[in-house]
Length: 385
Image 1 (tube, helix red, strand yellow):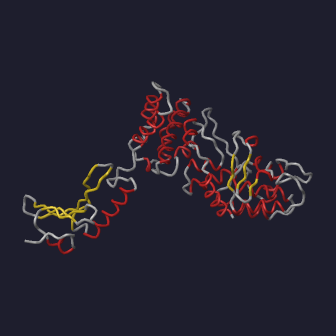
Image 2 (cartoon, rainbow, N blue to C red; image 1 turned 180 degrees about the vertical axis):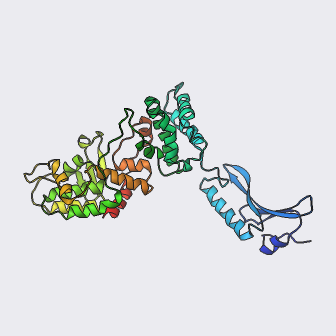
Image 3 (tube, rainbow, N blue to C red; image 1 turned 60 degrees about the vertical axis):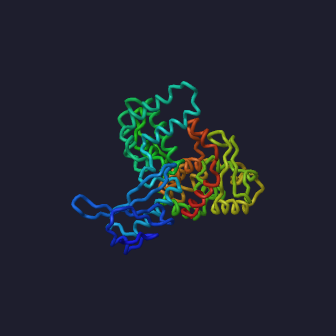
């Protein structure tokens, strides 16, 4: 009779023919070899692993021997154990379907709704009627085309229902982003492809593909027949993705060079809320060069007369540099780069000082994500040079 080993060996696994369950010892992470005799007398061997998922012991199949060797079974068992420690389900059930994520999102929002509110039922109805192409798919496999199919049929015929569906589907994907099930919100790309409810397509500011921004910035720096302040102002707009008016009105009192932060007061922000701009090394260099310009104006970018730069001054810089983009278009370029670089949607929107329309989303997004925004804007500065 073959002696049962304390831990499995390749030789034992190859030669054992007595039916039973043979464990891989205390350090085997629940791995075992199950030997079974079929009705026709054949011996089959399969790998199993016992792991505790959400408090319950679960048996997971790792494949048959010899297709899966002992070394491969141990590697799979190790990967599963690591995944369980990270809260994942090695059976492939870790990523929820959209329907499951929608249910979790409703439960989360229920805390902010009044008792007896009809909103839970209304949200469920929206998902059932207008998110059918999404319901059964794992959320990490949903693409913007799936969302487009959900919204296109009602976008013009039922604009109110379409807006609610867009808002509620977005809320689900924000929950998914927060749980690290996916890095982005596919609703944003889908909506860009849809026309306005009145039949007119959306008009966007002229913007360069983000891969062309570095060359445009070099062209801007190379202009010599324009006011230096205007050139520096354009550079700052590109590097920080702020709105043109916010840059033209920048004051030295708002700049903290040591903390690498520019705090724009609420009175100059579109949303009427104070906004802290993390300054990359490129943006800090712009401010250092602006300091060397003559004059004692409190403005960072004063005009030749000492007052604020007129709105057309930075535009003239772009025209003379031969750059085919509006100033606002650089915000779109930066946003496209963020999306393609895997920056989570809520971080990207915060970089552009966009305020979530949903009061519920605002309530849960209490942080201004300054540390994460600083990382993103430094990466953008490095990218465009």
